[in-house]
Amino acid sequence: MAAIAIYSPNDVTVADRVIKYLPKAHTPDYDSETNKLVNPDLAGVVGVDQRYWKVDTGAIVEMSPAEKSAINALSETSKTGVHNLLTFSSKVKKSSWTRVESFVYEGEYKIGAPYEIQAICYVDSGVTADLRLFDKTNGAVLGTLSFSNTDEDKLTVNIINDWPNDAAIVEVQVKRTTGTGKKKVHVNGMLIGY
Image (cartoon, rainbow, N blue to C red; front, side, top):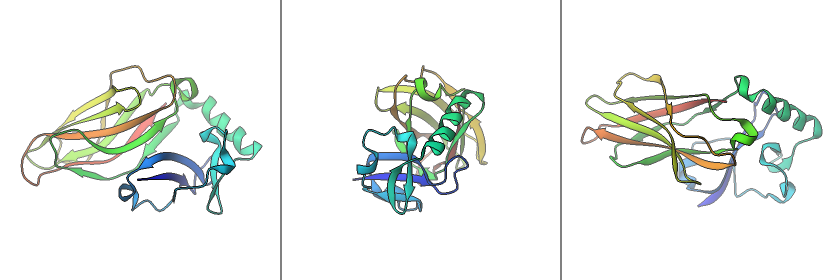
């Protein structure tokens, strides 16, 4: 286990913006992630809101006032169509809930509640599956999806609970509901609209 910060070198708002920080991550899950820092030094961002973090020459630093203004402008428009794209690829054979991705949801007070969530997923022939968004911080299911399509497609997740007002860790979890052997559930990303 280690802390991992994932950043976006080509972010359209602020280059090298930290898009995800996980204080305790299973590092092999992030081996394929090229834009990451493992156990980063956070001394330069003590007391700084995480949305104002960026990477500069291998360290996490506080954004400039102009960069913070760009982030604030993004937050002000967040309820009018800003999307968060989670890119990952997971194949699951288990019939119990299995985490395939996690992210920090900054809270409804900061970014608003999602108005749409779409998952990019499919199953092998003879398999059905369930996907859910689970608020690990507060122990609540936030959205669900059942699917059996064998071609990759973008499917809408049903939002079933109020999202938390404050920051929370949200896991994307899947399980195989029918099917045996080596047949898998494939989840290749998620789009969340705020």
